[in-house]
Image (cartoon, rainbow, N blue to C red):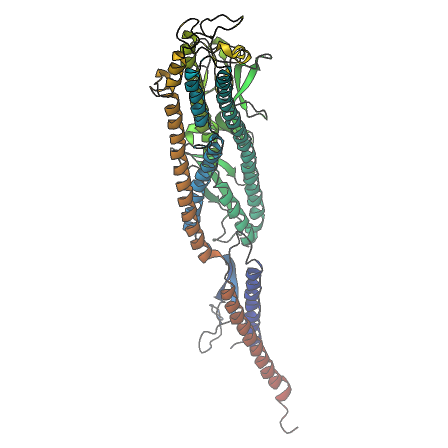
Length: 561
């Protein structure tokens, strides 16, 4: 037969279990606005019935229940939705960074506008047309020189601003690499804490949430995948264990960055200027090493991954797929090494240390900013060469002590060179010949020697507005520039559209995840009332049992008293 006090134990179990459920409700309500928190639930289960199985088990009518217990406290998560969210976060990270990079470039180029490079071309050509009508006018010649200088300054300004943004992208790559390393270290530290708790039979739900939140952050930068290692000991079957994190590469292979309580350190590498001419600031050789803190352009090559002293590398082409995370997008915008004449040692399967430019070495790079800066450099050089070719064929204005001669190069580089094949003109250094700025009569507007009223050469110079140039894909200078702007516009539109689409999809998935895991105050209030009533009922049951025992103890055997 059952114990006289069995009812007390059964009701006490009800009290403690309902109390645990109430405390869990309180914990959920307290964290209703905590980012990354997953609502928790007490999994109640009936305790073993009475009597137990055995030879000496008492014979009673029926199998009596002995109450309830809290089997475990688990968090409510959907792994499938979590994976969806992280995959979309990776895509959003890529397109958001791409959109920002394109937007900054569009702000600098500012086309169409009254102040852009295209307008500078128009004004310069217009001044040449005016010069063709008044080739002897000093005022008109001064305008040509000033507008030519403005055109060169426009090239210089755009190049300087784009180079500065490119430098900012380099710094951002270094900064974001530091953030990635911090996230990895935090995940490894949480793995250690979880590994200390789980073997004791507990589920550290709040630590799980913190770890998953960090994984969400990491998925913004790289396409990541995870697996788990069980903790052992008395860990519950539903315990997650330590999280192992991998960067998933384009070919489907994986590189581990978190192994239980060990986290890797990622270092961005590139070709940094090694030997630089002190006078001209010209780079003589590059060295393959970690990104430095300078403003020099260093074409990205790879990440070094150091995991507890063991190192490996992943090059950009291993994770450069579209939508592969913010880091891939930043590198694509900043620039990455594509080919060098002294780069990859197939025998040792590693990058060589240096590229000696004086010995014919070369570092080629690709990416949004290197491409556009390269196109601007080609535009500046080929336009200047074609303009100079016509200008040197014309004749200057002979006046006073000045004798009419063939014109000099109108546009030159930093060394004063402007002849095709013998100059280093770029968008950054193009300028008007200082001798022409000092004496506007040296502008060659005439097709004949000492013909003051002859402005035919100025007409030929102004006709460059529509003249195709072989070095510019057989397009005129302005058409070539408009094509550059058009391509940038297409990239910007694509990035904006894809960012919007990814944001919309991520928001939808986030709402789905919230419907599963987030705290609903209405639901918690309902649960609170439910558990409170169950607690009160258990308390009332104890009172009933107490009254029964009181009757047995104090009332029996007192007949007639």
